[in-house]
Image 1: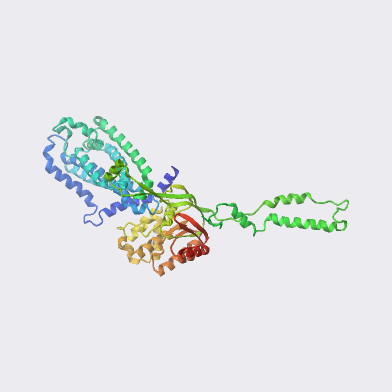
Image 2: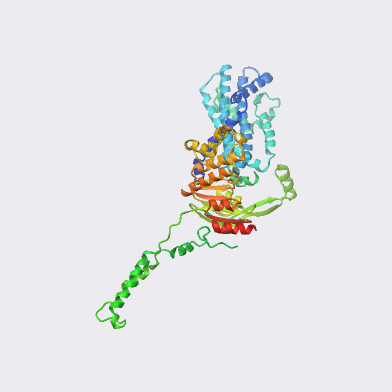
Length: 260
Length: 324
């Protein structure tokens, strides 16, 4: 435990250097650069609004904002886990040469995506102003799903990065899994408007859906009272998966160097 | 397995050192013994006339003699520098799979068919080393002897299968050219990045930034992405960063072999300067000339075992013999 804290202190510069590197290099050779982080969710939202605007019905939450909430959170989860999954293999050469606590790689990948996620919230703010969605004090509740999703992404990222070292095709399997998760996140439709009402249990099993529900509550000015199930479910799931990720990573990390 | 009895590098019996040091020193007790030796002479003179029998009325000062004899056991131990790297019974085993299995489908198929076969390969076996501060140890051996594996264990990158490695001090490993570098980053950015990998803050590296650039002689190429560097440039940059940060233990794995004569001279000079400051250096090389030039002690590894260790000249000669 003592060594763990010593290492944290010694390598804290490295952690932030890794985060900086991910952000700097992502858009270095592109024209738009960091603006792409803002542009991408905006463009997706426009496309989805144009295509699905009649799915939502009248008198309900503002559609573009509704889409954006789900899209941004899902986007962070999907990108964060994908980058974390590849991170250990990507830095394989470094693992074999310099001693660096290996958990730095997936965690810094998730954190760099988190920073980009926070920057993209500017788009959400902009669209809210544009669509004249009222801002209430409930917006501060948004911190809760934002923190929970960080913990969940880190946990899932740790598990995936561990097993990706041993099984290279995990990357493709996870892409398919992410697609499945996206469709069960109700990003561009409402669960109540589904044709087969008996399928609601699927959504109750998806922790990301819970987080999106909470986030929407905060944005549209509703309290969490009605959605306490979602709050507890996502919180417990995130903590469990994080502990699982740490455990699995810790157990297997000594073998990375043999496979990477 | 012959373990050389040269105590300073491989000391199985720490008392052996004291025995070797004892001989050259004049200790307090010995000086006292000198005085006791003269006393009986005095007595002898006084009692010369009576053929050894003490004259009546004269005291024979025997008791003080006995006290001084007991003090004979106090030895002044010559202070050796503290041990910086200690490996005890170090062993590393690799499980080599007969077939390459790196995706889920293959793994499960073979698991079910019970066809997952392994072969054990001991890269290192029963390695006992005690390296002291300020030693420059050269590691010689043929390809596949286990040199890089040993360095990786000491650097903390590879966990040993058996035995322990204890390292006291700040390690800077240079195990490969451009190991800590990211290919898309420029040289300058990589300096900060590699520095942070070794555990140094940005401010610390900034102070020494100009020194690093000067030593590496890269000039304006420092702002070019590292993927466009030649291997010599990468070696120069890596070496200059590693040596400027004033490590306590420096590990060099055949990095100095890449580089022109000018670079070799420069790096030798720098290493000498560092040695005077008491930096411990582990140096792997295939050329005994380099080892002779840079090291004071050396070991030879063969098939994972230490077959010889001791002073650099002796070991290099032995290594040359082995090669014939």
